[in-house]
Image (cartoon, rainbow, N blue to C red; front, side, top):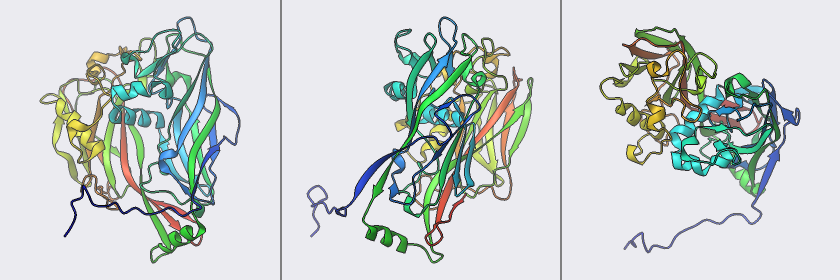
Length: 434
């Protein structure tokens, strides 16, 4: 007979006796203090153990100076706002390059973390205000109000990338050199001009991660699991980014091409923002995501001659349906009602018309209208490549705008794709298949 699962004894494996976990900290190799337009370069410790993907995070101290009385308004998710571009190199070859990294991370926080969770992480992510200026409240989980000059505060958050998003431990004992480069954004893109600082610095910058060390026999057995080509293959995912301009006063039907050559696209995320920098009279700039149809149009995507979704997403007929599609885009076949969204009505309802030519959204409630679709062939499957391919044709963003746009915009498309990390057990060559 078979015992009911509630009373069946659990069969659990045992760790090798010499297993250990080492928490490592990598410091930048090119300096100790960094400001706008500079790069922060980390070299990871490789040649031993397995990286725990969930343990990779960054921490640093942010200092803003020369603000006028009342403090400046820091836009987006403060911990990610300084990072304009992310690059990862394996053996001096660029394998991951994410432009507008701060916007991508900010959007992921907004669609995967609800308001209560953002409040709980406010001290790590930097939301709210300096406590001596304004008490924290739930209306300030989209930016930060700086205190009197100089305002200095610590920040910490995960670092999304190929390594941290791997579905299994990463065998760093098989890797050669691994380098991460973060390029810092300008003050003009990070702050509203109201009492904006004239300078900022990042100090005490550290990249933290855990390395799990097993017996040498475990590593030998792991290497023996290579395929017939002598390769170990890990599944991860990353994002391709790009943007297209859209002129002020645009109306009608548009088809904007994005030349991403990817073998397995999991989902697409559209971020439409004003083409001007933030300012006292121009709102939150690129940190604002607008409905450029102003409740009078539709969105859809074309990949490999297939339309996603098959029936366009109409902002005139049912704008709420776009929220459901957005949930499916990031959570696959997970029940829509059980998803966590950090988008509020105040941020969701920002349109091109309501934003206007001058911009009206506050740092604490920037536009958060995001359009997303799932393009997996089997949502949330554990198979190797589950998405749709764009190797033979570009991705087209299809827009129907029946109310002319009130400002020039940048149409940004984030394509989340499956990435396979292929490791040659003999040469330590690591390739990314995407």
